[in-house]
Structures are given as C-alpha cells and as structure tokens.
Image (tube, rainbow, N blue to C red; front, side, top):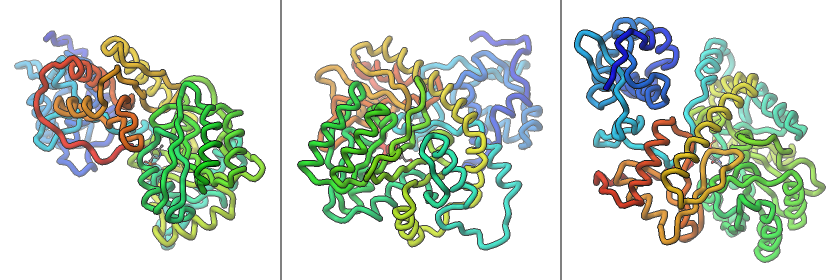
Length: 481
Ligand SMILES: Cc1ncc(COP(=O)(O)O)c(C=O)c1O
C-alpha cells in the first residue's frame, strides 16, 4: 500500500463537515463516527492512501472527545479500513473486497452488503432543514395537527399545482410516509372481499396493506418496455374481476421501472373510471426522473375519474424522515381524515416543519438527488454489463433500481440464498409477485455508495460462477422497500 506521506490528506474541519453530526443513532459515539468514516471512504470522498486528520484536530472539529476519535480510528484499523504508519498517522487503506463492504454489521459482527431495500441515504439538505426546524420550533399550544400543519399541507398542495394538478391545502392529509398513506386508503375504502387491481410485479408493501384490509389483489402484467399495454390488460382484468380499487405506480414503478406515457395515463384513468374503479397512484418515485422530463401527474382531471395520489419524502430526502401524504378531492379527503384521526392524532411537528423547509428548496434537493442517482445507476449498469453480461435489464429513466432478467435456469431465490452466504443481501424477484412469479428476476437497487455497488456486483458474479462462499448464512430481511 502506498501512503500519501506529503501531508495532502484531508484536514479536520473539511472532514468534520462531510461527516456531519455524529451520534443520535443509538450506538456508542465512536461507532457512529467509525460508520460515518467508512461511508465516506466507501463513497470515495477520502481516497485510499490519504492521511486522516490527527485525532486531536478531528475531535475539536467534531466537538467530541479525543477518546471517541481514538476508538473510531482503532475500529477502522481493526476492520481493515485504515492503517497506522508509525510516526506518520492513520491512513485510509486500499479497500479489499472484504473491507469495501459497507456499513451494516451482521449480528456476529461481520460486514454485510444490504441491497434488500431501494432506499438512498439522507439528502445533504436534511440536516440543515432539521436544525432550522428545531431552532424555530413554536412550542405553544397542544402540538397536535390532525391532517397535518397548514404550512405543510399548503407546501404539498403548491407542489402538485406546479406539477399541473391544481390543489389546495384541504385536499391533503399528512401521514407518516407513503406506506402509512397506502394503509390509510385501504382502511378507508377497501371492504373484505373487495378486489384491487395491481401491477405485476408490484411493491410488496401495497399488497400487504390491501390484504390487511381483507381485500384481494388482481395482478395485471406491467412491462417497462411497453408500459401502455397495461391499459388494455387492465381493461380486460376490470371486466373479468370487477375490482373496486386499483393501486398503480405510474412513474418508475417499483420494481419494474415502468413509466406510463402522458397520453397513456389519461387513457388509463378514463378506462378505470368507466369500470367505477377508485385509483390509488403511488408517486413515491415520481420526482426521481433521471432522463427526460416530467410527465403530467396521474389524476389530472378526467371526467368521472376518482384518484387518490400518495407520496412521501422517503426517496427524495430520506426514509427516516417519515413524512408522506394523500391527495384527493375534498370529499374523499374528509373521509380519510376521519379514519386517520382515529388511528393517529398527529404526525410529528418537527418532522412536518422540516418537510416544509425541504419543500421550500425542493428543486435543489431533487437536482442533487437526481445527479447522484444517475451516477449510481450508470455505475451499476456498467459493472453489471461487464461482469454479468448474460443478465438483461433496461436502463430505467428514473427510480431506484434495475429489474434484471436472469439467464435461463437461474432461480432468483437460489441466487439470493447463495449471495446471503457471501454476506450480500437482496430481495428475490418473487417478493414482488404473487405465487412463484418472478423467480427469474432480481431487483438490484442503485441506492448504495459506489464501493458497495462495485462489491455487490462482484459478489453476484462470484455467486453465479460458483466460487466458494464464506459460509455465513444471514436471515433474509423481512422489510422490503
Ligand atoms: C412504491 C413505494 N410506495 C411506498 C413506499 C413506502 O414509502 P415510505 O417510506 O414513504 O412509507 C415505498 C418504499 O420503498 C415504495 O417503494
């Protein structure tokens, strides 16, 4: 390993700024700091061979004790991310396959590459928005805001209006994320035995939400290569099954990446209106446009069509923020507001105030997110093409993952099991379908830092070429987002 001895390593204030606030995640402070440093190294922000700042300087810049920094550096050294050079300091080590494996730890202490969820790390705008929200928190009054604060409902409504769907604050209910919003819609409008038309493949959380209301899914194939074909198929399925509801992701469907054309979404809305179907448009990924421009939001007025849009800041900002919403006409919103008030008195005021600030600079938030995701998508696609040339995928125009078709005879569940034994966690294609559908598919998110993406592809390539694994089976994760 060649170390950069001429002192051109990163200085303490600059490193402290990139790391951001340390702690608050329930772990000891030194672990949280070590995790932050690993993330930065995996991301390439501090390259291999660079000198890390002296412990004392970094402790001052971060406002933590020197012991915290010493312990964090020790953890990095022990896990192979850094090396001490006697008399010269601590240097970033060249990432080996083992050490570039990211920040999540298995229970027995080893590193895990977690590609189960298509969920990016926090936006760089989040910390500032939180700090400002807390600094300006008004603590008078009872602190409950059923349906959401007027400031946040207005900000969400304004964004819909700007996107081409005129909306007022009384058409919004704020929820704890889009998953919560989906539960709210099904709880309010689905009755046991009702049928709900879904895309196939689809987001598994939606199927769980509709089933928890006693409804049944009616799967209709969706194909990103020909998304508008869904309209005829949905028409036929609606004739045969008489669904009362439909759950769709018109923009960058999870996991297929399909996006309906502008004309297609109006035709679909008219078709479903003819069948008396109330449509839920999940727009969690609608703003994650990586190529091309925006489309009119699903639900722009089509006579007789009833649409409920759901969305959140989970993919544009951070899943940990827990701010989402439903949007519909005032009468349907009033019904959902009553259901929600029975379940949940209010979404956190600090989170709502943070969301208002983020929506105030949303174009900048989105620009940063899109640039980063575009880079990660292209990196994943190029490594996949080089290392797994027989796996096929479309490069999606947006969203968070590749939906890969596996070569003949390869089972997604098998690949996932074998990858888990090499500490790479993935969700099998079957998680996104009914029965055994999609065992010939695998979703690979591009929401991870570059080092982890590169490592994950090489683990997958080793998995299918039959290299010996390291033999530590890991429990498959329950949560798939
Ligand atoms: C399509 C879709 N809807 C909803 C959700 C849940 O989002 P939230 O974190 O806002 O509850 C996800 C999360 O992955 C998703 O992919």
